[in-house]
Length: 179
Image 1 (tube, rainbow, N blue to C red):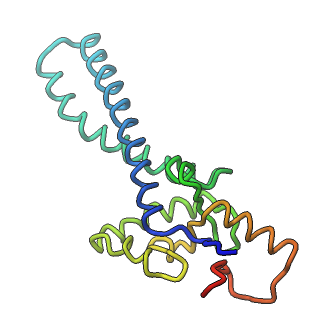
Image 2 (cartoon, one colour):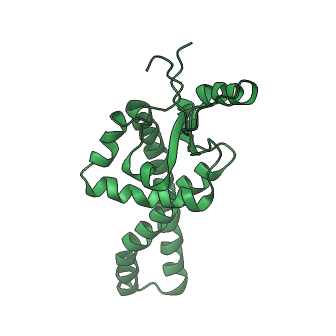
């Protein structure tokens, strides 16, 4: 049986694309609500044009802070959850695990999120290497010691480990029997 445990570049790329769409919609909703609240507060407290201009100049900064917090919590909380995946990863049937093929904690999920800055600083090379590394890891995965795996292959792997213990010591094991 040919089973690939690690999720490849294109599957991960599509998952992040789905997450970006979801986050973009949430940013629109947050900015709409924030704008209504701020305008409402201005009109309730002081109708002067001067205060409206000064507060409206702060809106982009407030929005950036809220969108950054939303994104950070989205990835951190979803990847450490019982689903071990963001919505995009869930749709594509992949999840984040540690070296022991177990759920990661919030700290590791947050570290993995912030380590993506390294991938961005390398002009995306940190992401592209996913297609060329043995365990399909980006720079952020290597440093955080995380793996993105296909759900069904992980279930098969865990079943094999439970009922047919192997003598190999390398963790995680690649289920590609042809290599």
